[in-house]
Length: 233
Image (cartoon, rainbow, N blue to C red):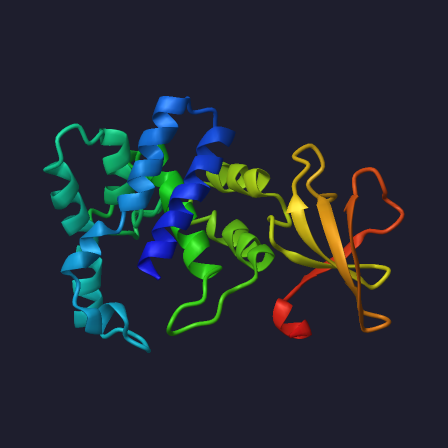
């Protein structure tokens, strides 16, 4: 899980950083930070990392130390940039000061640290873990709107949502007509009308020949809701 999470965080940070206008060299450093942001978990006991259940206060204190360990490891690497280090050192800080390890508040957290905290939580919640099922991306983005009043900077959250789209790539959506499809591309000027590959019809309960439609161009049928793949096996 930690490997896949690290790759996902790096990929999401690349997308987010491009959206925010960072240049190529900066994006490269941000991606490196994403890949290595949890390297401190090497020092965390497997019994805690892989525990199937809620951590005790003592165990959570040990888990939180992985951020400090990541910083200590990465600071020793010659040429490791401060931008990459901020991803690792600040991805558990929160805008209201409730995060760790330093309890930084507001813009005392670097811009990239704020971005990393959003991406880290988004990927963790949309991934299946040993102790929880994955949440649907659209539900997580709605929760971010709530959390932006406290844990995350509102402007950063709104930018991240615009970056991913209301229905992120990979989301399964149901249309008003009953067609079921997978979002495969965003139209950033029209977030409610992504490009969808339709594969199933809920009304007939049959798979259909895959067909790609740009909803921005064909607005006779609209998205009713995002659905869980588990509903359809």
